Amino acid sequence: MNHQRRIYWLRLGVLLILSLAVIKYLYKSSPPQVSKPVIVKANDPFWGDKVEARIDPIIKELPPEPPKEELTKPVAKKQTAVRKDFSKVQMQLVHLDLKGAPLKISYYEQIFPLFSKLGANGLLIEYEDMFPFTGELEILKSPYAYSEEDIVKILHLAEINNLEVVPLIQTFGHVEYILKHDKYRALREVDRYPNSLNPHSTESMPLLKMILTQVLDKHPKSNWAHIGADEVYHLGDGQDSKSWLNNNKGDLGKMFLTHLKNVVDLLHAQYPEKSLLMWDDMLRKLSVESISAAEITRFVSPVLWLYHTNFNMEQTESFISKYEKSGFSSIWFASAFKGASTPSQIWTPMDLHMKNHQQWKKVIDGMSKFPKIHYSGIALTGWQRFDHYSVLCELLPVAIPSLAVCLKTLRYGQFTEEAKKETALILGFSKIDVEKNTCDGNGAFPGAEIYSMVRKIHTEMKKKVREITEDDGDINAWFSRYQRKHQFANPLKMEVFSAKILKANEEWESHIQALRTQMDSIFFPDTVEEWMEENVNPIMDHLRELSKDFHEILPLNARPKAIPKK
Image (tube, rainbow, N blue to C red; front, side):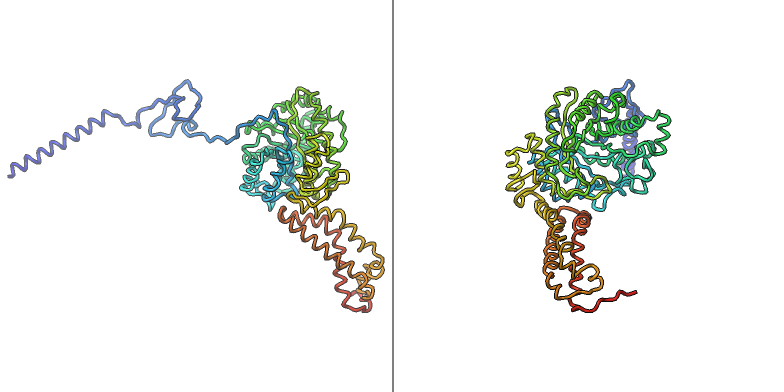
């Protein structure tokens, strides 16, 4: 029994030894992968598509981190839209100037289909402080700035209504919304003024790069970007600029173009799929030679802007000719459908803007004179403020009839009877009289209620309130400022004009409240407050004061004159 058990254990031991020998042999015949270099060809699809060929093979240890990180980690490519062909399309952009009276998203849902129906095919959106800046740029945001989701929504609404979106980002002048902050005050061209950027500061271009990147990254499908560059006030007056001019023969044009080229080069390198636009006014006094030498004409197009009713055609064509000779391959124009008459305009003068577009139509029709420069489109500007600090111009709903008239004028050359009928039908009016600046009927377009209510304020409020507060003989004689101050008035006379004061105040306050309700549905609270303070309160406050004093003095029943306290 013991003998058999020993044989069993002996056999088991021999088997174990043989198994270990086989395993060791197999292990030695297959060297560890960690020690053997692996040759990887540069065009191996495992490492990513379209990797450039190399002369030497790439040697990689396993299991390793690859010696060339870019060959193993897929490079995150910025999403860009396939560029559309607009060579046979004349763009008509509606300008949305959001540095004043920015619109709620719900109004875009209503107004974008109307823009498209009227003939527009694009939007020029000037966000300023309404853009949802992040990080260290967050300080630039308005308290009512859009969210990132809002921007996505705006772009979606534009897309489904066949409206190309062109973001406008100021990069030289009109950067008050940036330079008003203490954080960026040192970047002003002149310390006292927040209008223009110092082009020589080492911090200016990094700041612009951050701003441009944040805005344009949110607009991957935009085929154009507008870099502003108009009205660079006091350029050359800063100490850095004076030093630069002393070393560059006082060439202010070169200074402007140098900064412009830096911006253009930055954007072309980062967003080569986007064409750039710029306002043209700073180029008008520069020579063909200096513009050509700046090497900007390949990547940016001038936007020639004129807002007058009867601008000089010969001078306008001379600008176009200059830009053609300078090497620009395309040109845009800019008209105005609102916000270009007076800074505090409340009611849009349709006749003025219609005539401006009649002039532009002549220029557009005559572009065959300039075969080497392509006319790409026109931006119908709708300025909401003259600059970041000025008062509000006409509200957008008030200017919708003007926009419609201007777009139809571009189509027909004149605001013809056919155009009048089309426009009236679309807007829900029975008649449009451009010369008298009137539209008969209540209107049926988004914001028509505001249009009608502002019209009443514009045409009636000042006149009717002044009839009571300044022109009424009884009120002036028995309820003067002096009498009200001393609470000295006769109820016999007060009852004669009580209806005038109290009824007028009640009716206008009701109208104002209805307007405020309509404005609240479209605009943010700060816009409503500002518009009322600028356009209603200066007129109504006198009537409100009369009504308040009437209610306080009548119950006194003709008491003696109150003696002011010392």
